[in-house]
Amino acid sequence: MTQLAEEDDTQESTRSLTTGAARNLATTTKSVPQVQATTPRWLLRSLPWVEARGAAYRVNRRLTYEGGTGKVSFGGTNAATAEIVPPTLAEISIFKGIGDQALLQAIAGKFTRAEHHQGEVIFAEGAPADHLILIAHGKITRQRAGKYGHTADLGPVADGDHLGGLTEGTLWGFTGTAATRCITFTLSRQGFSEIASQSPALAAHLEQHETRQGKPRNGKGEAVIEVASGHDGEEDLPATFADYELKPREYELHVAQTVLQVHSRVADLYNDPMNQVEHQLRLTIEALRERQEYELVNNPDIGLLHNADLSQRLSTRTGPPTPDDMDALLTRRRKTRFFLAHPRAIAAFGRECTKKRIYPETAEVDGKTVHSWRGVPIFPCDKIPLTKQNTTSIIAMRTGEQDQGVIGLRQTGIPDEYEPGLSVRFAGIDEQAVMSYLVSAYYAAAVLVPDALGILENVEIGH
Image 1: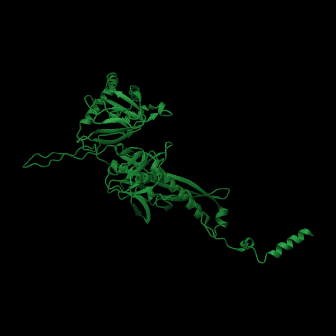
Image 2: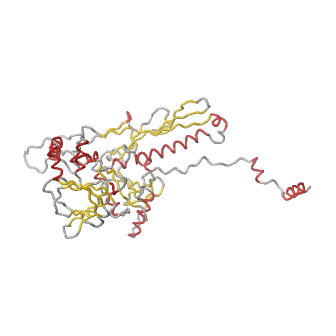
Image 3: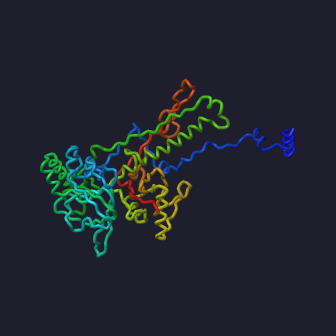
């Protein structure tokens, strides 16, 4: 009797149908599936895309005598145990072309390791520069005496860079000072001569190197085209030709793929008001495009971070990205179209501008407002990695075939094309009634000339 009384009291207190009960008869308004990992993908939107027929793109250039990246790698678990990785010595011009790993190992064994504390002068301007210095860890600033008695800053060098040479009679044209704690490896001319005297192969390689160094070249290291000017009368004009690289770089299209699986019962019965296959495909393509942009930045073969020339790699002067650093990066090329930076690097640049009481302008691109510097937009890209030391990189590039810049590569008109360069191919239904779709995106990026792409490295983003 008590329970019935309580039920009667509840019914009497409700004068109309509750909203909870009413929702059982109502049509729910719903959103399409949302995803948090979607980014603006400015790189994919800003690169000019070029057709790569035959799935490859060959970049023909004038013959360049300079070779190698100039970057040496070091092994070891940390800075204290750093050691030279011998095969990477071939990235230095004088050692380029040496394929004998035992010889490179012997050369690496002649380097002596040294540690330098912050502020220590490692070498002075005017001192003999007949030794090769490799920077395993740290940053070295370069300064020289200016014409009017001031000190000119030539910018820093850092991990993997090298200084000096093995030529007798040369002098340092600047002073090198450790901006941080540094670990270096040094090869003296005497130690190198000892190896050369014992190795006929190395001696022959040095002769070939001197021959290459003696050939005329322009400021970019390319084989010079002889031209006469300023003459009067019937002078003998030089005969010349434009030489090409014999083995030009070819960029092959890379692929990002996945197999989308949808149960036939879901596709048949649960398609109202939203098509299940369509939205499954939309979310899958979003993930593929995100991976595509990541690969264009980080892939060891086609990634922008791995394809920048040594001459176009700069280090920050003090750590955080300052206006001076951005200017140094900007002036390395003509027609810089945009910067690409991690959002935290953009924030760090904003803090440095605020310290100097500089207020960068903004730019409007595709109806969106972005930061800019000197009129060049700075696009955010979270695909640029952050290191454990809280550092990152900032990329600057010129784009387009007409401007000899950076271009994106893809092939359109492929079978079952869903978007340009992306195909969705039905792969059948298995015995469990699960439908499969093969989703493939084909892409690559090519740097037409070295100065089209530049990188500001060792950008500190901490407060």
